Image 1 (cartoon, rainbow, N blue to C red):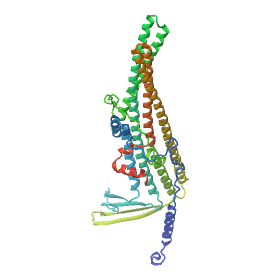
Image 2: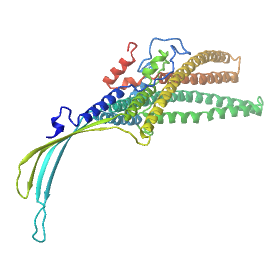
Image 3: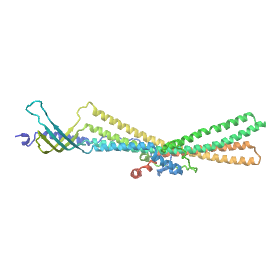
Image 4: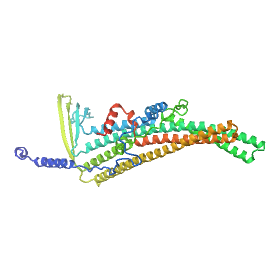
Length: 490
C-alpha cells in the first residue's frame, strides 16, 4: 500500500505547509504600506499682491469683457483647435492603457483547438510499431495571476493616474489656447486703434510740415525748422507699417488657433464697441490646486509615481499563477475510433525571486527616484503657479494706475486742444500752436491706447494664472465632477 495515502500525515503535507507559509508571508508583506510621498510646500492663506477674496473667478471669464466677437472666437478655438484635438487623442490612448492595466487583475479566458493526422508508410513489410493516428480536440483555457502583493493593483492605479495626467494635460492645452486667442485678439484691437491714431498724427505732421515750408519760403522760418518738421512727419509715417504687420500677424495667429488657415482672416473683424476690463476676483491660493490644469497634472504624476513605487516593491514578493485547461477531444489510432473524451488540467505555480543580479533592487531604485522627482516637480509647479498669480496681480494693479493717469492726461490734452481751437478761431494764435496742441493730444491718446491694451492683456494673463475656463468645455459628467471637486465643502 502507498504509505503516502494511508498515513494520517501525507508525504506532501510538509510541502503544502511550506506553500501556505510562503503565501502567508507574502500576504503579510504585501500589506505593508509603501511610503507615499507628498509635497512639503505650504500654500499661503492669501495672495501677497491682493486682499483675501472669497469669491472665485468666473469660469467663462471671456464673457466678462463684453465682446461678442471674442466669445465666438473662444468657442471656436475650444472645439476646433488642432492642439486640443491632439491632446484628446493622448487621453484616448491613456484610457486604453488603463483598461489594459485593469485587465491583469481578472482571469483571462481563451479558446484552444487542434487536429492531428499522423500516417506512417514503409518501403518494405516490417512490423508496424508506430500507429496511424487521427485526432481533434477543442476546449477553453483559463489563466489568472492572484495579486498577492498588490503589484497588479498598483499598476492599475498608476495607469489610472496616467489617464488623469493626460486629461489634465488636455485641459491645460485648452486653457493655453483660450488665453492665446484672447491675447492675440486684444493685440489686434490695440494695433488697429493705434493705426487710427498714428494715421491721424501723420496727417497732422504733414500739415505742420506744409505750413513750416510755406513760412520758410516767406522768410518766416529757417531750414532747421523745415528739417525738424520733415523728421517728425517721416517718423510718424514710419510707425504705421509695424502696426499693420502686428495686426496682420495677430489675425493669422487667431485663424490658426480657431482651426482655420492664415489666408482666411477676412472674417476676423473686431467688435466696434467698448471692451470692458473686468475687476479681478482671484479667490484663495489653495483653490489653484483644484483649478490649474498643470497643478492637477503634477498631482496625477505624483500619484502615478507613488503607485509605481508600490509596484516596484511588490517585485520582492511571490507571484501565484493559476492555469486550467478543459475541453473535449477524440483520438482514432489505426482507424479504431475510441470515441470522444473529456480532458482537463489545472496547475498552480508559485514563483519568487531569489537572485537576479540586482535587477529587483534597481527597479526599486528607479521607482524611488521617480517618486522623489515627482514630488519636486509638484512643489515647483505650486510655487511657480503662485508666482504667476502674484506677478499678474501686481502687473494689473500697476497698469490700472498707469491707465488712470494717462486717462487724466488725455482729458487735459483734449481740454488744451479745445482751448487752442478757441484761440485760433479768434485770431489770437496762428496755426502752428494749434497743430502742436493736436499732436500732443494724439500722442497722449497713443499712450492711453497702449495702456488700455496692456491692461486687457494683463487681465488675460491673470485668468491664465488662475487656471479657469477649461471647465466650460468639459463634457457634462466631467464638469459636474470637477465642480464637486472644486467646491469649498469638498
